[in-house]
Image (cartoon, rainbow, N blue to C red; front, side, top):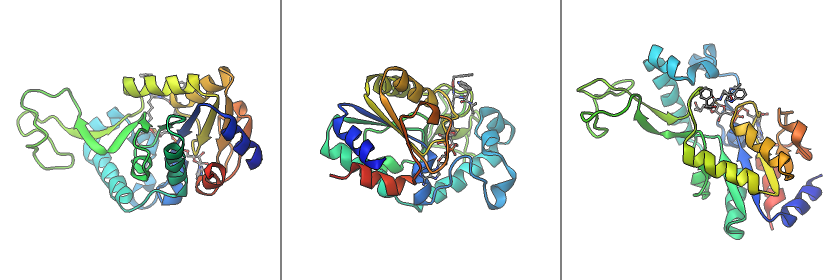
Length: 241
Ligand code: BJW
């Protein structure tokens, strides 16, 4: 199976890669839908990652992101992130990397042109439109920090459920999905849209689709092959010289 996929990679003119939380699992970052541990075990991540949750419980949601930021700061890109970055370096312009992850690990591995469709957990933005008084350099400390004049809150610069994806990133991702002749779908459950729709679009346009995931996913139905392996083991073997 791996040999067939290696052959497809050699043949492909344009490769699109769609990654999800599973590619960072072997770095030690829990997947999004994994059971949470400790203090956070009682909360469903899907119910924390919304604007409504943040407005109702700003401190709780801020603390959840602070906890995850601390965890991400302590981990490193793994062999899967590194194999993708090395392939792009060896084959400039052939591979477009689209990630749903907000952890920045692809970028830290050297994939500097990664299209991050769900934003970045490493940055903040204003909750409400910035007013003239809102100065990110002069915040009132707190959980979350706020504008000392109008009280506007800072929030993580990620895309929550019900929010639009950054238009430029989504356009670039759709273009890559429509133009590729091979899409690798790595470490995602494939339940969140419009991200999952990128794999459907690639399939509909006639691209080969390969799912790399130890577990079955919602996107297996459009896959030409499913490699049921952990990404950090599989990718170096697929992508090395
Ligand atoms: C391994 C592994 C190893 C483990 N190796 N693999 C069409 C149909 C239905 C619903 C919708 C639709 N279009 C839009 C919606 C609504 C909604 C949606 O999709 N809901 C579904 C849940 C039903 N989408 C949205 O709201 C999006 N916005 C939007 O569409 O705007 C337009 C609009 C506006 C208003 C109304 C309606 C539409 C926004 C989606 C934003 C998603 N944001 C999050 C949070 C980011 C911030 C944060 O991290 O806190 O993004 S949710 C979360 O899910 C996160 C992830 O990027 C995303 C995907 O999760 P992922 O990566 O797949 O992780 P898991 O945990 O699910 O899976 C991990 C996988 O790894 C598993 O399969 C494991 O087996 C595997 N694995 N170890 C390889 N070693």
